[in-house]
Image (cartoon, rainbow, N blue to C red):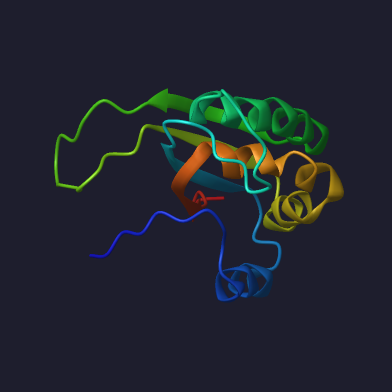
Length: 137
């Protein structure tokens, strides 16, 4: 199994999501790996850690989540592997509960989200973002 942390979805991944349409309530499982020091893509100087920069993104994103009826269902620091092996363990994880896949996609494409997403990119070394749903509805 190959596991690659990324900062952005590929065009193919985004198109596959769009093809799914509205499949009801969905959950995004996020596995985060933070930079030691924030690295802003526009080259600005910063004394922030990766976690601190991501926190700026998180504060604003939480407002957008609330406006659409989405919630952070769970968030935690990861401590170690119990079963299996990975070369580098992620730092933390979160599960976000969205009313629908189209609403998630609209948020990520919105000007409001884009306005603060630079802090996400500055703070993250990479992440996995896994789409899930409850099979019983």
